[in-house]
Amino acid sequence: MEQLIYSIAYSNWFLWVLGLFTCAILLLLRWGKDEQRDGFEIKPKLPPGSSGLPFIGETIRFLREVKSLPRRKFFDEHELRYGPIFRCSLFGRTRAVVSVDPEFNKYVLQNEGRLFESNVTASFRNIIGKYGLAGVHGELQRKIHGTAVNLFKYETLSSDFMEDIQDIFLAGMRKWEEQGDIPLQHKCHQMVLNLMAKKLLDLPPAEEMKDIYKAFDDFVGAILSLPLNIPGTSYARGIQARGILLKRIHKCIKERRQHPDVVRNDLLTKLLREGTFSDEIIADTIIFFVFAGVETSSMAMAFAVKYLTENPRALEELRAEHDALLKAKGKGNEKLTWNDYQSMKFVHCVINETLRLSSATVVLFREAKQDIKVKDFVIPKGWTVYVFLSATHLDEKYHYEADKFLPWRWQNGGQEMLDAPFYTPFGRGGRLCPGLHLARFEIALFLHNFVTKFRWELLEVDHATYFPLPSMAKGFPIRLHSRADD
Ligand code: HEM
Image (tube, rainbow, N blue to C red):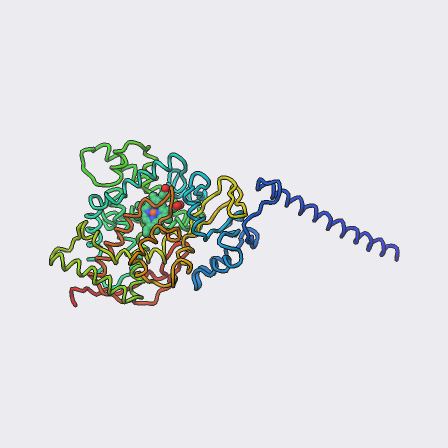
């Protein structure tokens, strides 16, 4: 018996040693495999950081902290510990690096297509389509991007957009006035959607084309949803909406070919006239403009009003600028001219500051196309770099009292910040937003009309969130009062 006990104890001890030995070998083998996967003979010096939990990484912590104050908490703590470029597993990507270093961000974005490449998930690509610009690379990306730059360039705003923007915004605001109580965020969304539908496809406003507008809405709603293609989910509705929109766009293409004599000032006509792209590319490009141009601009409008509501001094200064503009034009002459737009100053400070605090694009994803040496470490080929634009916008090192809405920081030389690597609401490099002039123009014309026509009060306290997009939980419910009654 004793012998048996000894022999069991001995064999258990032997098994323990054997087990530990095997684990050690397996760990060594796995470590070696990781090194080989990264393409290095010896362990590369990766940026400092941690991988967090398997697969989830630090996503849960990020999502929790991005909602709390100060808004830069997650980045401040990581930067303090590891520096501005750190290894961090987020959103299911374990081989990833976060950058909140403005100079490195600039380097990454300016080397698009050479050292780095924008990368999108398969589910996102299913929504935006094979030729949706974010997922297109190389020569074709440059060609479509160049066309978009041409369509939305500063010089075209006066001839191609001014009249339509004012007509649609003035009509929209007349309705808001009748309604009195409005959720501003949703109303801005609808108004910008009307504008894009008119400018892209020459469609009449929402009331006359409910199905198409619902499809637009479902499509935009699906972009940031969980990619579950199960009936009833936002993603599935988005895929369905994409089909409806494609059908409508192809119908418009056919109509334009059948009736070339009908004069239209829309972007589809211009794209067809160029004759460079297939119908499939044109359809995906139009759909991508809806994705890129609606939520981004309309959120900025709603957030500008939120910040002005909270900062009466800024509102007063903006209103004074725009009342003076109207006074100089004389009564009954409410439509603005190109010269009026060019004379506006403070409104651009308000727009810059709004986009600094709540730009629609929080983070850009880029994949390293080769091993990238940064400082004294290496980002291996195939790794993702998260370029966190919002983190540099909120960094006290570059913006004093960074959490506060202070449009005056953009006055007296503040304009130089527009080119600085720590202010990039529209990105940079080969994918710099081609709609940036249009977006600024829309927001300026919106603010001009809104502050000169209305006083307003907030009906309920609303809570803003900033990820994945800036948004207000209740849609910013306000009561409007016409200033004509003052
Ligand atoms: C406040 C409003 C807007 C903001 C903050 C914004 C921001 C951005 C940013 C940061 C990018 C770069 C994406 C990247 O590098 O991967 C981008 C790309 C793009 N934007 Fe905008 N955008 C706005 C409005 C618009 C408008 C009105 C349009 C026109 C319809 C537009 C069209 C595009 C397009 C087509 C791209 C893709 C460029 C490419 O990948 O080559 N954007 N936008």
